[in-house]
Length: 498
Image 1 (cartoon, one colour):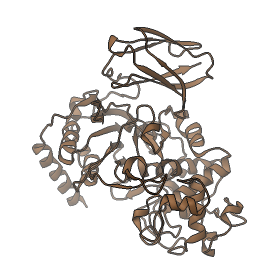
Image 2 (cartoon, rainbow, N blue to C red; image 1 turned 90 degrees about the vertical axis):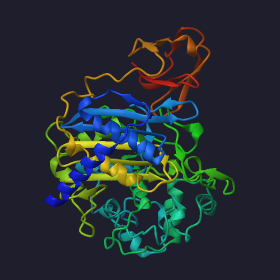
Image 3 (tube, rainbow, N blue to C red; image 1 turned 45 degrees about the horizontal axis):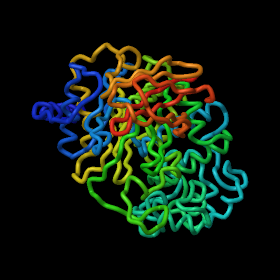
Image 4 (cartoon, one colour; image 1 turned 90 degrees about the horizontal axis):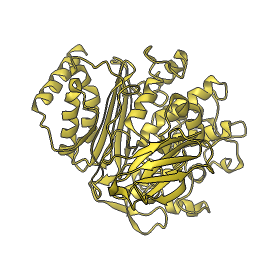
């Protein structure tokens, strides 16, 4: 294995020597010691025709690198900023796992808990008509380890029907369950229980399952009495200073503030989940983001993902939100497949914990907690039609960190301000009690603004009528809000209402 590491380092060094800087724009704090990552990222965008990307890295608990590359929106030439948000796909699974482990620490769940049946957590009547009695033996551990018994390459993936021809489409599934298309997580789970036998006995075979993690999302809702998103945000994310990780939406019209657009270089279409007929762009209507709580719904920045990694990485540099024993349990490989634990893929040689994500026609993502106390998150908003992008992403996070000679001492989490956006806008006072004053450049006069609450719902709309505009907030409850200002050159800001 030592020789393997030397080979990887040699290959990475040769790649470094041959990289060519492209014209892709970069945003965020320039860090001379980490310029190797600037070159690697710009090369990635050029080689795979990726529209936009983000990379963040921590070293010993400090955020030392946080940059955007390319475009969040090509039609408006909006650059990816360090605080833009991306769909993270299956990187949602470690977030779900962290929430489950937190509930286990509080005594609300146990890994041995059965999920279905009269004595199961989800003992609702709607889940009591499973055609395979083995379903009633599935445990929480099975779901977290992907050993629940489903194999999407045999019986299909109800969230992405293209995985197998034996499953009907999202629209038809909703119609079969008597609910309005595109259905819900609950109707999808119920359909699979009622119509499909397990492909394997629970606990015997490891097979990646979005369905299993969707079920975990329902488990979290049942034991907490709260929505999945609300529980995770209120209990896990916000207490550690993460306010901008939210559940995403399917349609472009429901895009979250500061969320990038998504691009399918394959230019393929599929039937709409809303009517089962209309041929639709993959990112915006071929799969249902709203039903993927637990398995693939989150939208986040690379910086916030790194902040979460630092809070569970078992290193002493920053306090963890889980106990050492809980983290060890969460990251111990299963007996069936030692390279996957409870929500994390494992490289046991280097003590790395990893998870990747893919939403067809939309995005690729990867996070890594490295054994050398380096964490990273890399997000792209393009499903490239050139093979090798996933490997390239993995290489940047795996091969390049050992090449850094001197890691910087700064911490962007705390001390280094991110650069101003394309247009200078001032909000004051912030925090505020009753109103906020906006000072805007002349280019934005006549532009619209929208105020969103923490779940992305619009609560105030208006227009910038002069260089100084006052917005009344007295009717809003205390909390964190996002102001989105402008049309073609949209700016977003976080404001706290006391």
